[in-house]
Length: 228
Image (cartoon, rainbow, N blue to C red; front, top):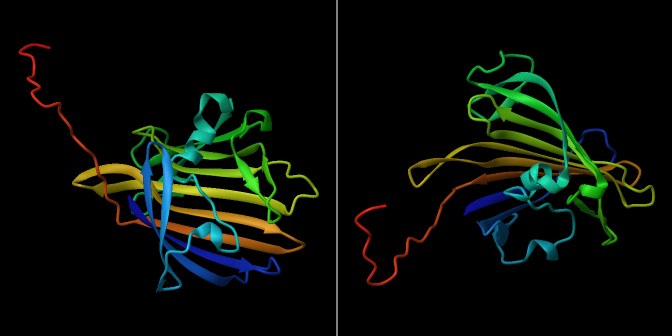
């Protein structure tokens, strides 16, 4: 479980002048590969309004869906190694153009592409229409651990008559201390979506206050064997 803070902004003319629309704080739980969110606050005020009852754009899948969309065998993603970059350890971000392959603090950058026929990436337009599209992007793999530190997704070939003209997402991962142990978890994400002639929407998400709950059950009367 963690707390997710989503800030939704709009750039009406596509000129980089962002206007904050609202801020949503939710309790997020991830169990059995499913995300569940409960609203805690909207614009600093306590609220239990479900996100999908609010107008505007939201995303999901940052915990497992994004990685699964890229790496599941059914996606048949085409990976091509591109380069080695350095990693800013303090923020889990990639700093381009530095580092030698295989050294600690570096990431291996791969370009990838998933065809629409194999995709599980869906986009829902403002008219409620949902389509599954192909996508491409990059994955940044930590050289020493082979763990994903960043992944990006960019939708391909959105129909000309579809309300959304383009959409992309990036998720950053870093080591997070939970119950005294370190786990690689999402720490931030960004969604960008363009619609209409010029309007661009941006959601920035931060994940924090992580907690992990597990159950260790033993059948009543169970006695461990003396040998394996």
